[in-house]
Image 1 (cartoon, rainbow, N blue to C red):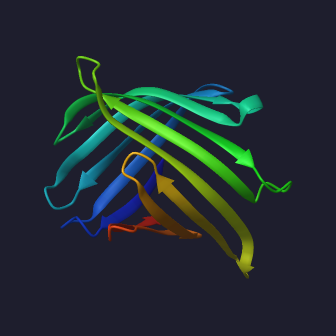
Image 2: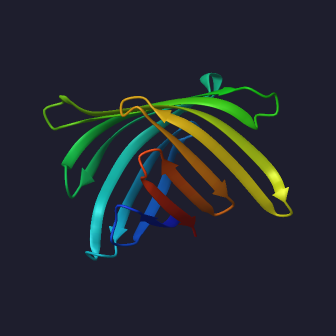
Amino acid sequence: METSLRYGGDSKALRVHFKEKLPINSNNYFQVDGDLDTGIGDLSSLSGTIRCFVPELSAIFGLGLQYDIHDKANFIARGKKAFPIANNGLLSFKMKGRCEFDKALRKRKPKGATELVWSIFNFKKDQDLRLKIGYEVFEKVPYLQIRENNWTLNADINGRWNVRFDL
């Protein structure tokens, strides 16, 4: 199980995020993830998604159900496609999107982004670095991610930010 501690500028409490990938076969898995909000002492979200990796397309697709304390239950459809720019795979262009639907399957919350991702291994001794510059298409908001080994900082042009530490 993957576990991380997360805190954002819009939150009053630390969240404990968990994710477990249960293999179905070599290219498919069932992913369960959720957040425990330490401020309320309860789950704030829980989701289950079937994810499919298509190696010949360098793409991932998923369908699932998400429960959020604010929005209740939603259906989710998502996809991500990577386009390598450098032959070594350390520089790539990614497109990703997701759409949440309510119980009546009406379009609810679309999200989509394009990202330029640069991975730098051994930036310093035993320190890997990943820089990501992205643009959220529906909100029209540029953002930045800096990841160093277990630490991740996300920020956007509107002043929203969050930090994550992978345990």
